[in-house]
Structure formats: C-alpha cells, structure tokens
Image 1: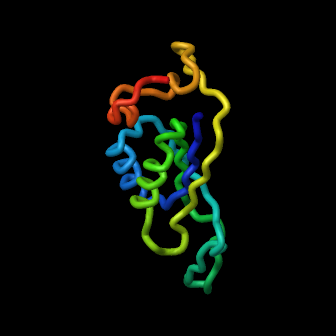
Image 2: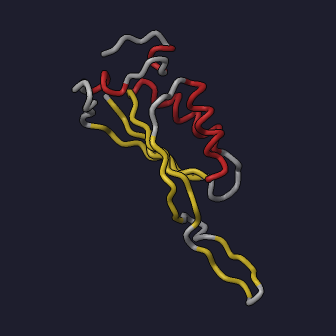
Image 3: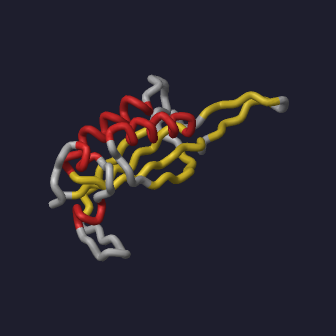
Length: 128
C-alpha cells in the first residue's frame, strides 16, 4: 500500500530535512511555502508603536508519496532533522494513497513512485 506524508516544518529546517531524506534514499518530494499557526497561536513582536501579534507564521510543507514499508524510516528522518525542541517544530500527517499513475509511462501504484537510486533500490527491494 502507498502512503502520503505531509510534513509541516520550520523554514530554517528545510535543508536539514531534505538532506536527511536524501541520505535514506527518498528521491521524490514536493515543497510548498505556507503560513499557519498551531497551539501557540503565532508570536508576539514588539515594535516602535507597541507590541502586536503575528498569527500566521511562515512554514514549509513537504509532500512525499512512498511505499508503506518505507514509512517509519522516513518519519524518523523527518523527526530527527526537523527537531529543535521549541514550540512550532511542526507536524507530520500520514494518509493512505488509493492510486498513483505516472503520466509519461502509465505505470501505476508502486511502480509509479519508484526512482533509480531510491530507498527501495538501496534496500534491495524488487518492484511490486
């Protein structure tokens, strides 16, 4: 079964997370610049005219579709590389993926998300 990871992380941790994912063999991902807030509700800043609340902070959203058997390694790589220990480190969401189709080749499912040198190839797993 295929899974989709949607990870929301701090902007300054993007390169660390990308490097950690590359190190374990995650080749394909999408990155989006987003704004939002969680439990902390934003941050309070002080300026010349007093203090004000910034409630939508810049974040990065990563989307990765991968085989279920690679899920825990990928989550662990994100957790370790995105961690600062401070409020606002982010969240990871995991969703089931019903179908994937590579447009160019019409490959479906696991075949559509395989890349040369990816995590499956490194672990010696055959294409499904």
